[in-house]
Length: 294
Image 1 (spheres, rainbow, N blue to C red):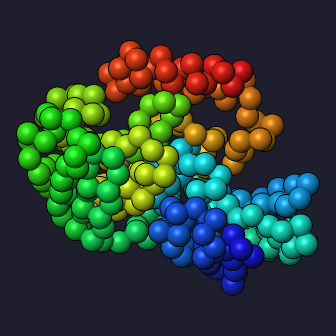
Image 2: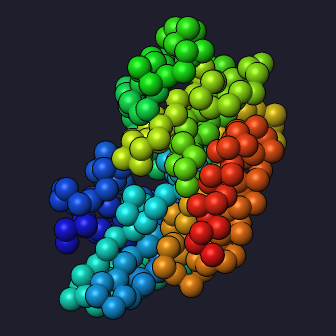
């Protein structure tokens, strides 16, 4: 299929994105995903009028990429969703049944994983978006500013952040008229707006920012796993749910979308505003964009 291909050998689901230019850039940049059965919590086939889709749901804490992006990916950017032609509906339903049967036979636990099961995107990685270019080699994060950066960032020069100084990672896509950003939380650093924070890059165009999530995932994979938080270790920030339900379940156009989803997003915007991540103007613009959907 143009969207890509999924195969299952009884132990692994192999996901290969399609090479068509209509396939989302992020999925093509992420590349092939090999998902062990032990990382899977479920699978569904959702029929549609003209086409259907397969959705793979992963256990919490199984994938460093989802640790960064869960709840914030649109359907077309979700690597665990496959558009299925109407003529292939029967094969898709059979595929889903085979995976569910294997999960039942192997008695894969439904709870969270205590370590990452899927590979991270790998290093070195470089991505440019908006006001900065971020590079990660596995030990050091480098941020160089573009011409679009605020003067306070440019005056600080190239930013170098040792991995051991990072306490959390935030990747937030564009919401309404609010810029997206990637922020590395550093112990002892002051809380600043993203456009002023030297540990943060921002972008204002939707075609930017997607592949920055690969850098974020590579960093998160090298931080202590979320299950280690109880031991006092630093970890990745929990997902900020600003997009479709979880990037794996219901999305735009589904029954779960509607007033409840918009109200939830408004509450999340309020939290970001209260925490100083959004300015008054940014919050007002983003809120109005959501209210227009009611």
